[in-house]
Amino acid sequence: AQQAGKWATDDVVPTTYKQYKVASFSGGCFWGTELHYQRIPGVIATCIGYTQGAVKRPNYDQVCSGSTGHTEGVQLLYDPTIVSYERLLTKLFNTLDPTLLSSWKR
Image (cartoon, rainbow, N blue to C red; front, side, top):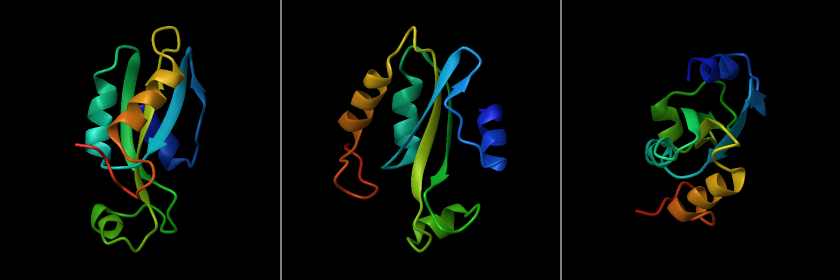
């Protein structure tokens, strides 16, 4: 998570880190989405934040107001020898409705 924070501060979006792969997903509430991923074997670390908006480094209240254009996101560091990218995508689509902005299934 510390490395992901450094990437965010440096405006870097990597695809690999050491022997691991990096995946970034957005949609729904990042707390719920993050928890789903933390329970999957092979997910090494998670980091949450905001993505796609027009305001640089917005705070929670700004994003929740809907005025910045951000969505909540989670970045994963995962071991592809243990869990596939396809499995991570399946988990995402099983926990949120991709047709709705910021909508996750309960």
